Image (cartoon, rainbow, N blue to C red; front, side, top):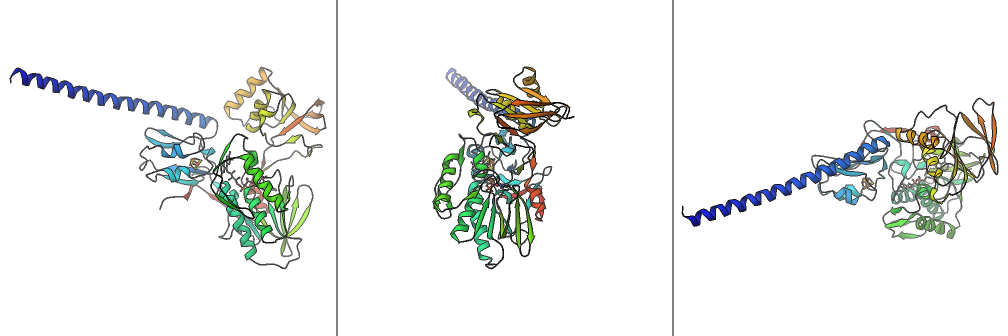
Length: 449
Ligand SMILES: Cc1cc2nc3c(=O)[nH]c(=O)nc-3n(C[C@H](O)[C@H](O)[C@H](O)COP(=O)(O)OP(=O)(O)OC[C@H]3O[C@@H](n4cnc5c(N)ncnc54)[C@H](O)[C@@H]3O)c2cc1C
Ligand code: SF4
């Protein structure tokens, strides 16, 4: 071998070695990044578990790890934050309980590795029985919207319309009830149903325990609401894709007003009793109505439990915390010993004078993090924690607290009261009305063929 060939060979060895080293470096950097990202996702999963957000409560994506090729398309497509992440090269759920069932991940995955399921093996989801006309096993009672298992505004609007059209087709024009139809709930399903009833000249009444808009009304003001084009009865096509809570609420309110439809707000339906071929609908306010058909569009959030104390029906009392950033300088009483009460009290305490009253001797069912935070806040006097007490009366400018043994009673100045005393699940309401329910343990709602 002459010197020239020798030099060429050395040069080649150096080039190939550098190329191999470069490739190894790229692979090493890639693996390091993947490991770091996986660790971040693992930390998020740990936090989700501590916060009780890891286990899905309703609809959620299930990833087939054998088909997943780590494109991350599902994560990019999901409009909510940290529902999915990539761990060890495969997609996985993080805050699965926050999934609202858009199905964007399902459609985005190029290898069809995602199925949308309801419930899990451990945690079943109770769903009512409805036939293809949205009628339950109790003839005359129908169900539309999220209560039936499918989330999303667009689905609720569509089902509300279809359910009422089925009621119209079912006939039964002659009856002795006051109304043809009573709609319970005025979320997107109830609003769409009310418009369809008007369009078909049904004598209809819509009853709502809270405020028009249902779950949408409770969204934070800044939330971007993702939706698809939908047909709103008596209005036409709504081409909103990314919108805001206020834009949607304004639209619904204006369509209802234009068509002279009034929703009876703060009117909770307590029972639906079959009677002489129709139903008697009774409300918490003691009102009674008769109707030939009932449409339940009550969603899945349930109804807050009331304390049944004097003054509870006044405007200063609320059962959920909306837009706490706008509440400042108030004297506030928060009632309850669960996570909602504690989290709300902590949020409000940063800008207000807050008392948290709980009838128990100690908190027993809090997430560990909340338990720590509330004890710290009480120790630092950021809020006034009153254990072993009951709220017994609500006045215009004050509230009355009593010790649980009833020995001591004290009147305290007050501007606002928030009550978090648990609530009645929609399933309890359905069972009371005779509607059959089945628990679904991880059944696929949306899957690739
Ligand atoms: C945090 C969050 C974010 C979401 N983001 C989106 C999004 O971006 N896009 C989207 O499409 N969907 C979103 N959703 C889902 C969407 O809000 C729901 O799928 C939709 O509101 C369901 O409509 P509904 O009419 O079936 O029920 P709801 O909107 O829940 O309305 C039910 C109504 O019935 C009332 N009611 C209940 N019981 C009674 C009773 N006994 N008597 C009288 N009234 C009663 C309730 O007060 C409520 O007003 C989100 C949900 C959540 C929780
Ligand atoms: S279904 Fe929707 S909210 Fe749930 S993970 Fe998929 S894209 Fe996100």
